[in-house]
Amino acid sequence: MNMNVKFKLLAYEKFKKDGFDALINDLRESKIVLIDAKLTPEQEAYIIEQTMKQVSEKFAGIELASMSVLNEDEVSGFDKFKNALLETIIGKKRGFTIIGPAKVVHKIKKNPEELMVFM
Amino acid sequence: MMNWLRRIFGSLFKRKKDIKLGLYGPVNSGKTTLANRICKDWLGEELGSVSSVPHETREIQMKEKVTIKNKGKSLTFNLVDTPGIATKIDFEDFVKVGLKKKEAKTRAKEATKGVIESIKWLDNMDMVLVVLDSTMDPINQVNITILGNLDARDIPVLIVGNKTDLKSANLEKIRSAFPSYNTLGISAKHGKNIDDLYQRLVDSLR
Image (cartoon, rainbow over all chains, first blue to last red; front, side):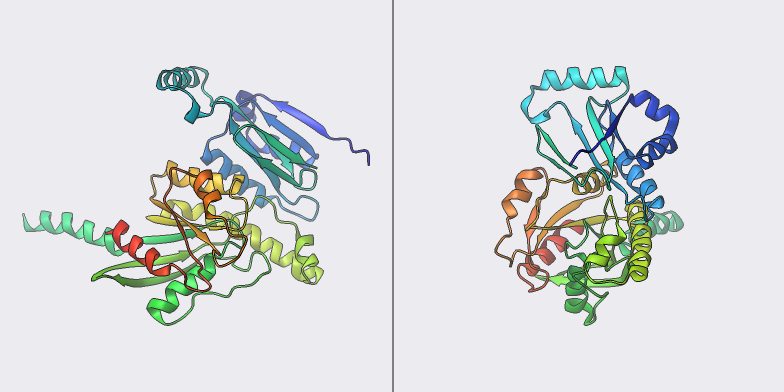
């Protein structure tokens, strides 16, 4: 079966500036959104909370995965320090977040190094 | 001087008296079964209904002044059973398990409100048991988000791997997914290891 899926690449800075409403609009248009940062747990919870308010017959919520690109267990203390410093300077956690409408993305399975997206 | 002492010790006493122990976790992990087990053991009555249909608990349920005792120690807390947290709720899933369309839509709507309430109540907790189904893959975003939010709020956590009576239970998977947390395997349904849980609660919250 052919399936056209739209991905939207979203800079974290734009996500913060435009807010949640812009994100939910993209999700309601069946787009899968990729953000170039790992979100904080509070941001993840906020997105879940706000998405739940939008659930309807056509929009069943989301699938979400937010990951760091750095496995903190595998790097030295100095590298952790460098990374923390860098993240403070750039104002975001290095990593990425994928958010898709649940009617399009049925499941995201993750392990520390890879993601499997079931559509 | 006496007023000052009363104020200090009064606030400590009040804080301890009002301990809220929350049960958090994904849908159908057995939170209400555990809440019922605790309430039945110490109050002689259950807290809420359980079902294999997802989102049976759709409102926060609280039982006040639950006192548990273990080896001469006791602890009193308010037990808060929360609706399971999910990122998606599709009414069609309820239809698939036998609910009529109208009933399924109502349940889905209530379930979304339940998720929102659960998230809002995170700020009120003093300690949380994160109840996971030990037969399921523990690495999913809901579990990670719950644990991350509890960490961010400095709320003490014990992971409870439930359903260890089932053959497919795999507690090690939970331990290796979340190595920095204490994890205890139980079967809330059958009471397996429940005394260990009570002991840990009495020890950790005193």
